[in-house]
Every structure is written in structure tokens, then in C-alpha cells.
Image 1 (cartoon, rainbow, N blue to C red):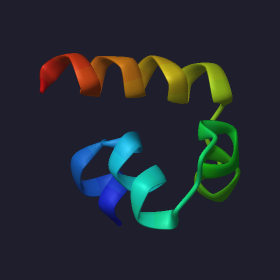
Image 2 (image 1 turned 90 degrees about the vertical axis):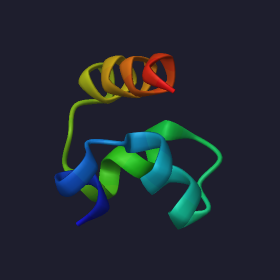
Image 3 (image 1 turned 30 degrees about the vertical axis):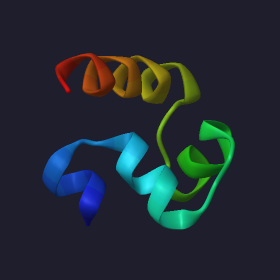
Image 4 (image 1 turned 180 degrees about the horizontal axis):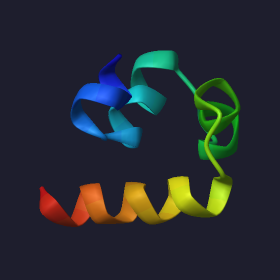
Length: 46
């Protein structure tokens, strides 16, 4: 729900306690490349 609401992949990664983004995207059903692009965009917005 955090990902759907905010689009913040990094927040989901931290909340789940994952050290690798690849682990997080497995739970979200998102492509790794798309997820990395979204994570970079989200971090640059901060």
C-alpha cells in the first residue's frame, strides 16, 4: 500500500528491512530496472 500510495520504493525497502532493492521488487511484482529508475527518481526528489 505504501508503494501504491507514494510510489516510494525506497520507503518500502526500508519498511521491509531489505538490503537489496531486488528483494523488495519481488514482493511488488515490478521489473527490477523500472524499480531502480523509480527509486533514483524518488531519492532525487528529496
